[in-house]
Length: 131
Image (cartoon, rainbow, N blue to C red; front, side):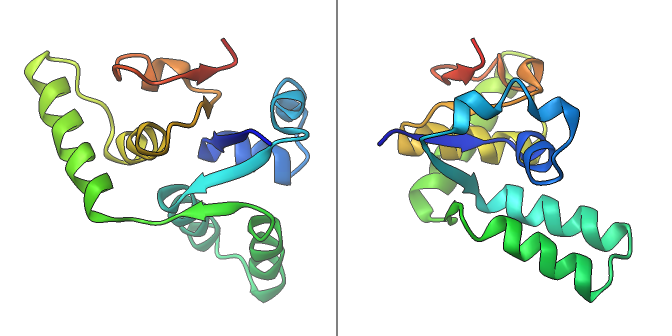
């Protein structure tokens, strides 16, 4: 079964059953859904910023539970550093969290499903979906 890495926005659309999720469901259905540790952190940040209570936090944890979460590791950190330096040298830096997500996709050879293509298009070798 193919695995796909979801950007934080797509994860949020899907778990909250928002209308924006519709084009992404077919890209995830029947595949192993994967998240970067960064997306989990972003989801928790968003929840805490909105002052979610215990019930909503439990719902978030339940929504995260079916996904394989890829952790930080030294190889991933080295790739992130390489990409950041390369993109800055080209004058096309990208956001810190987006770059962690991109590095995770590249490190594990996974396509990235995102609603924010323009945040990731400058990352060399990254497979983006939808195409």
